Length: 501
Ligand code: FRU
Image (cartoon, rainbow, N blue to C red):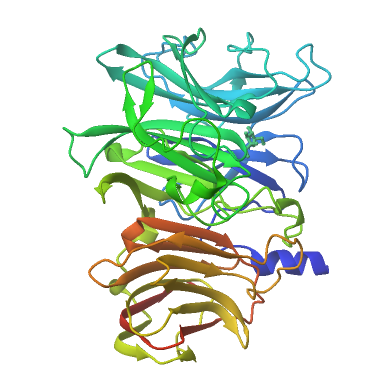
């Protein structure tokens, strides 16, 4: 076995989707159809670099284990297949259905190459499937929506049914202008311009991969708000790629944000005032599934950052997806907040099968290994109460002075993920980071759910009000779990650890 192959296997995730030996970036075409979750994704079928962009394909029924399938929509000499979405067209509005079989229709960005007469243009194109998403045919009349722009991409389509009518709506970005453009269509082929949103809030990098969906506030069907998510790169709250969201109203033509903090261009001092899908460094290009069961809103992201993806120490496969999350919208502290929980089998309650538990223990100043808690792939549920310590929390994937610190600084009001000593960090200057997110105690406590895998930590704090997702590259022997307190003491109320591998 070569050294590169050993490294690859060391970091290969157990709970997250990754390809065997090729490049991936954004999730695409997410849809639940015929009892199966389909995950398509930006993929280079031939290598480990961002090239030959095609849609790879995997399916799952539990949102945790994924089955790989052949490339779904392949690049050719004329075009790369950039990001986009899939809708089920039960009424065959597109006319792609045949013999009573309704089509799945993919709307993707054609990034035209030098061999095309449209070289340099990004326009929206269609492909359809009549076998439930496994094989696809490109529409002969592509593209269907062309502004002759070099940066018009990432169409997300959904069915709008409301006071304004019943039709398809498409949201896509003009990336360099920090704008989301909205269009409508009756047949997915002819598109009529509706409106433009942006620039607004964070504009420290180009806007990519938007999404727009309704949410019942606190589950109340009488109180529906619309959420517009848009990813940007760079300009995230801790640097590089990240996703922000706006909450407001959509009347079938225009999205009106109720959460725009500043008009015009970004004020770097205000990043903390904007709303982020995730505060960590590695949650990008997040989009939601179409047609998820029971009207649930499920999202997944590419677990990476354009800052350093090309240097990741994962050899031939590059890189993983995040866990799938269920999002809900709640009214908190006078504003709306997307609250996120892990979805699928990993959402099972941890008390059912904990391999390690603690209750009501003091964390004295210093760092203390929890004997019997070690593991490389685990779910940790902990409730902490501050004492005199200025910072306290857990160290995961630890060994001696190494480890990833996940803690709280109550006086500062921050959640901290410190990966400076997390293992392999020197492959890129931006990687050895200490990252923070705003957090407030609830009834005097801090509650963290942490998913640890071979190359990542995902932190859901205060029931998912704040999340932080970060890649880490520890040695396989770095498996200790510790608690720590700096400058005083703190307390653990409950701690449950579930080992997955
Ligand atoms: C986001 C992105 C998209 C584009 C795709 C190309 O990461 O840049 O805007 O469609 O990746 O791979």
